[in-house]
Image 1 (cartoon, one colour):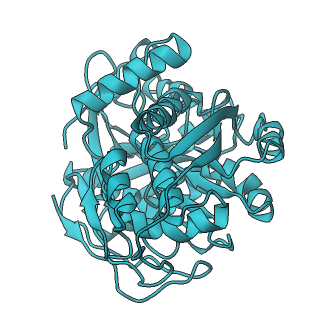
Image 2 (cartoon, one colour):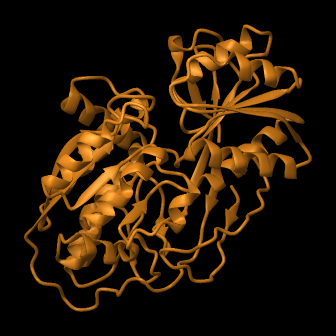
Length: 423
């Protein structure tokens, strides 16, 4: 595991640059950084008793190209809500679940106005950077926090969000570097990339290209496609004509159509590389073998008890089995951080909560480390400053609302087209 530190220069909420980092190996990586300093005032006086109700609404994918991410994210939200309420530390969370859909079916156009009209103080979502971009200004205008567990576009670092946008997922700049180095360390020299033409796909493609070529490799072909496309023969032909020895697929559920198009044209099913948007437990939904192919996914190794609690929570919420765990930890931590920030502020006003999010994440550098809502809440209620280290990692928000600590896991597919973590 390699550790990286961001520069100490302060960054405003509307302007910032993530410094370049060199990656020394295709291992799970931690980006450990220092806060820009400022943005929060530590809680120093003994607080008043709490009797708070926090209303949150989810804008997570129940339909559309990212629907497979909905169950783990909603399970994370549900589990955190249940555990915060059970702790009885002076704050109760009310959660309303809503569908984000995707930029194609536009379910968010119904969900977001309804949630804002219902008076939620925070939106959890969206999973897709492209979807969040379509409603973020609306939420900011309403004075409501938007807290995404899965947005990875670098564009949000410099968004004019009035301190109301936060995320527990790291920028694509990090994942692109890890993936590029992984492909190079696996011995590949000629990379083809097929990518979704949206904020997520373009940002990740750029970061991957820069890193892979910095290792001495060549991106021999890079072809985009649009949301809703179902035929990828032109892109497949263009990429294969350049004789790549590896292909990176940056997209969502359409991956189950793209990959067979390559394999049926003679490309090896073992030389694909996937990203967080499509590192699914494909199983029989992938009609060709991808044994040996790899992918990256932000997030640390999840403790077994956490996965068991998620499975039980999702069974209770939906009556269904939870298969994927993508961004479940980030969703859980988003709710816990919101609850802790509300406790620290003794308020559920969005601006007040936002003013304490950096503090309770450890980004201000002044807190006492703690690893559960109840433990952190006791610190706050005792007049101290909590530094929550959760299931998604240390987080430690900077002034832009980005996590400065993050881990990227590496996964490999077996004969059954399901993956296991290898680093």
